[in-house]
Image 1: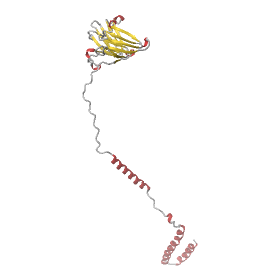
Image 2: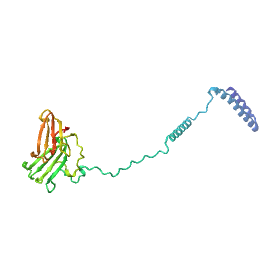
Image 3: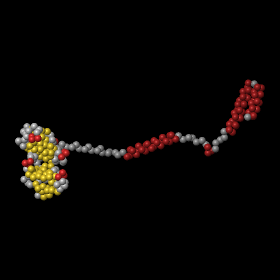
Image 4: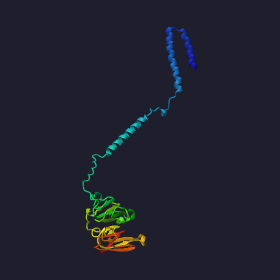
Length: 275
């Protein structure tokens, strides 16, 4: 630092003594010397870095990540393209059902009789009608043959709370019929196939149409409250004169149905065990 000061002091004295040309020359020399003198301390104060600390041009990480991402996406796209099945046949359409006629049902029978009261010969014809009720008294079907429409108790010719399959015979002399469920004329239903069941549920069955004659076995409870009512019938008009024989059976029991019987009424399941 003192060398620089001495240089400037000497230069100042010489500069004042020179003319214009000399001053220009001295100024140029002074500027050159000054640059040389200043470069030395700067070099000293800025030591060179060791080879191990040589600056490395920073790597653009984001560009590498972007390139890797693009490569991964390209690989996924290629995999997806390989895994997509080509020329996959389209599922065939389910053929529409043909117009096959449905088997006849009670709802399709044009002669069906809805619940209500009907005057015989006016609203309903005499004959045998068939209905279907539940398997116990809570789902039974009430019906009554009437001699008038007074509503009195003595207007009843016959009535019942039928369960299961049942029949009602309406006679020419009846004035009206009351039914709480649907019934259909028996002659509007197809005849039996000739194959008879060996086990029948609670209901009424016409002998030779629904069941065959023979010996039937049943099982009831051990007291009258859990007994099984059965009746061999000469007709299905529902009167007391229709009953050929009947019983409230308890425990194990048998019913022998004759070929001359018109129908069998049972309040429980029976199995045919012999002729």
